[in-house]
Amino acid sequence: MAAESRAAERRMLLTFAHPDDESFGMGGAIAKYVAEGVDVSLICTTNGDAGTIPQALRDQYESIAALRLAELDCASAKLGFKEVFKLGYKDSGMMGAESTNDPACSWYVWQNEPERLIAQIEEIIRQVQPQVVVTFNEYGGYGHPDHIAVQAATVAAFNRVREGAADGEYQPQKLYYTNIPIGLIRFGIWRTRLRFKNPRKVGINKDIDMIAILDHAEPPNVRVNVTDYMDIWQEANACHASQGGGGGFGPAWLRRLIGARQGFRRVHPAPNHNRIDEDDLFDGVTLA
Ligand SMILES: [Zn+2]
Image 1 (cartoon, rainbow, N blue to C red):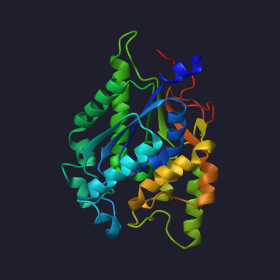
Image 2: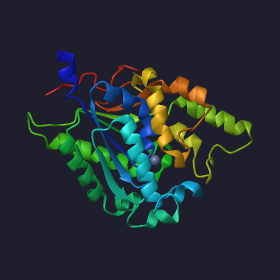
Image 3: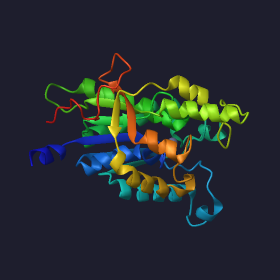
C-alpha cells in the first residue's frame, strides 16, 4: 500500500522532437514506468511533417502532419502517457536542408528566438513538476536539428527552474539523455563498411553520420530492465507505420537483446565516471 501511494507521486517528463522519438527511443522504459504507477508526460515539439511518407498512408490524411500526429496518438494510447504536449512546430528536416530556413520550424526558432522555445518548455516543467526529465543528448542522437533544439532548450529550462527555486519550492531533480547503445552503433558502422559504404553518409538521404554518432555517444549510468515490456514497446513502434514501425541499426534480435536493458546517461546530478551506478531513473529522488 505504501509503495503504491509513493509511486503515484512519481512524475517524469520526456522532451522529444518528432512523433516516433518517444517510442523508438525509449518505449520500453515508458511502458515500464507507466505500469509502475509513474505519471509520464511527453513534449513533442514538431508535427514530423518533413518525413518521407508512403503514398498509400499519405492518402488517408489531409496532411503529413495529421498522419504523424495520429500515429503519435496511437503510440500514446499504447504507452499510457499522462499528458502529451504537442508544440506544433514544423519539422526542420536534416541539417542543411532548405526546410531548416522555415520560420515555423523548431530549428529556425532555436537559432533566432531561443527564448521562445525555452519558455515553452519551462512553463510545462513548472506545470507537470516532474522529478525526472529525459531528453536527447547534445548531438540530438544522430544530429537532427529538431533534436538538438529541444535538447538545448530543455537543459536551459531545467537549469532555470532549478536556479529560480526558493527553499522548499518545486525543482526537477534529475536530468537524463537517451542513449543509442554504443554496441549497436559499432555494429552498424561495421555492417556499413562490410557493404563498402561510407558510415559518414548513411540513411535514405545519406545525411546521417554514424562516426559522429559514435563520437558523441557517452556510456550510460543507468540501465532500466524493460524485459517485461518488449511487446508494448513493439506495439507502440508499430503505430508509427509511416516511419517503418521501428527498426534502426542492426537486426531485430540484436536490438531486442540490447534494448531489454535501456541505458540512459545522467546529466544532473552529473556523474564523475562512466560506470552504471543506478538501475532506476528515480534512484535517490526525494518525493515531496
Ligand atoms: Zn526525431
